[in-house]
Image (cartoon, rainbow, N blue to C red; front, side):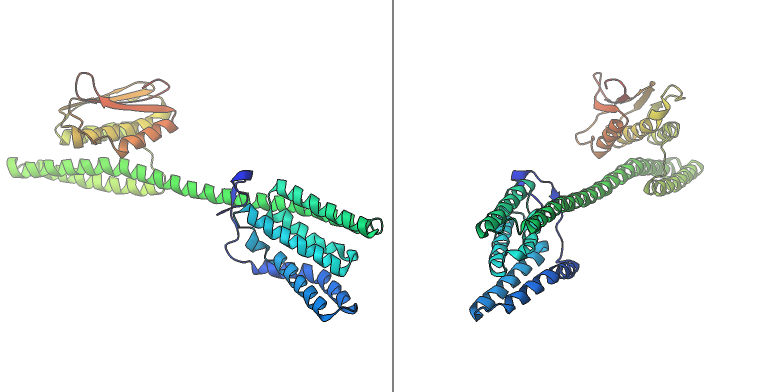
Length: 374
């Protein structure tokens, strides 16, 4: 994207044309030719020397090319460059006016249109005002002010219309730029949501599968309890299928987290990890709109306990707008990673906050709340 106006004038960034639009050349040529051709024919009808004719047609070609090249001018960042281009085009217009005569004053519309589209508002008003004053002074010096007043009014009226068209064109460019930015932000937000959900989902499920697989292995290696080991393997199979279904639901954004289901899953995972769990038997006291996000808190906190803490006991406490998970383990450096940051984002969206830190009496505490200080 390019800047329509530079920093001095505070203009927002708007996109310029990515390639030279051929359609603009065709349309502009159709608008130019009906005015330029009669003027050029009139120039040939006068008795001018060849150097004058060659110079005249060169100026006509430069004037038309300068106007047709507007799509090249618009994306230029520097206002000074665009101003120099427009000033040069205006000077060529006055030169043509001197060659063709003031009855061809309407040719100045193209220069003023270029100014209206290419420059910031303050410079448009200043430059356009100077051009109109120059035309007025020209007519007064020629003594044809009253005779050409109608053409002058037409040029001024068209110039005003071009000014507003230029502002409208700039607004359209700004809206397109805003739409592109919104689309990019939406894509980024969706990627963050998917990454966060998959982290919360797979981190807990894979940890539980690993713990259960280790438990089944120990049963086979030490106790030779094949029946219990087979039961754990069946549990692993069911958890793997459930995880696959959750991944599919997460990708399609249809998955909902249930606090009772997360507590039940936490109880099973902690049992397999041989960690005693003190969990609430009901969640009726929790506000319904908070049960989903509190389910994520339980999932992430219990996963961290199993992975990092070496705890022997985990306790989960609930209130109407808070949840607290404590353990008697040790939280090593680096245990607070993307998961807790993702929980912070979820709690913030729900109007709450999360606090995770070593507990005063030892162990670690994770407390999430909404509507009160953490």
